[in-house]
Amino acid sequence: MALNDQTISLREGEELDGHAVDACLKAHLPNLTGTPAIRQFPGGASNLTYLLAYPDRELVLRRPPFGHKARSAHDMAREYRILDKLSRGFGYCPRPVLLCTDESVIGAQFYVMERLRGVILRKDLPPELGLDAEATTALCKSFIDRLVELHQVDYTALGLADLGRPEGYVKRQIDGWCERYTNAITPDAPAWETVMAWLRDKMPADSGHASLIHNDYRFDNVILDPANPTRITGVLDWELATLGDPLMDLGNCLAYWIEAGDPQPVQLTRRQPSNAPGMLTRAEMVAYYAERSGIAVGNFDFYYVQGLFRLAGIVQQIYYRYYHGQTRDPRFAPFIGMNALLEQMSLQAIGRSAL
Image 1: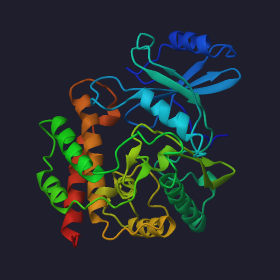
Image 2: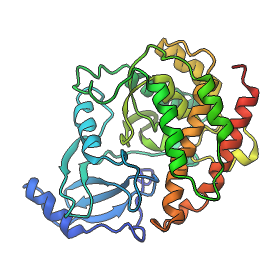
Image 3: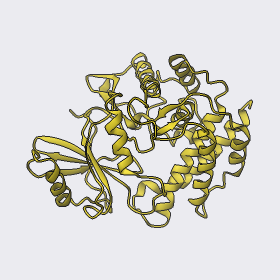
């Protein structure tokens, strides 16, 4: 149906060698027949995602971006392993079917998974969904419920206890993002020195809660049931998943959450319908998360500001590739302005904070 997530033609510079992929898949999936029609999913600014539409089966391929990549980023084998194990205990993951570590096939490692069909929200709520304010509130709570459910997964039982080190996670994140931001800085980028100093000064001790965390949880990474769009049936993009503090994960989520009362310049950065009538505010999201998870959140300012800084680091890493001509995707040209705005949002949040 029209509301299902749509694909686009392959973007220039992000073409996929369909013959090589098809040969690789058929060597490992003997029941695969026909020739795939290849399209690209438009969302995302990091790993690239393609639809391989065979006559009787739809598969999705994930590969790293072209150009400069952070040393520890875009590990296809790691993402495949997470999906393979997590899909056995968290019923919202796509099922992976093949990992290819032979970079000679398409110039990079990649993996293939089954396609999950449904609605993926972009900037605004599609009117066809027919969601009034009450239903939108239910959708927003469902969004948080899935995050809470993820944070309660028994990752040890699923064989994912070696995915990360929860102890010292907060400090490693702050130190790591300060280093990554500095390494990706361009002459036109803000310095973020005041924010980095504040984060180091206000850094809390470990919360005592260790969870499997998504690290990029937002509406365009979840799938809605077209027949009941308040119900989330899938969670995508596990590239950044690790073990850590669930409050950091919530802070990262809220960094994307532009609410209806935010200033107009902030509204211009909105990429999900978090301002729609019925959507919870950031404060309401934190309160609902605390209620559902049983985790005391206290003063949430640190987690929100670190989420904004981390988002700026991601934005700047992507802009670095654009600035140096390693990608020609025009979507990335305005990222430098987004970076500057995120710094201003962080400084304003620090100015209001009681920490």
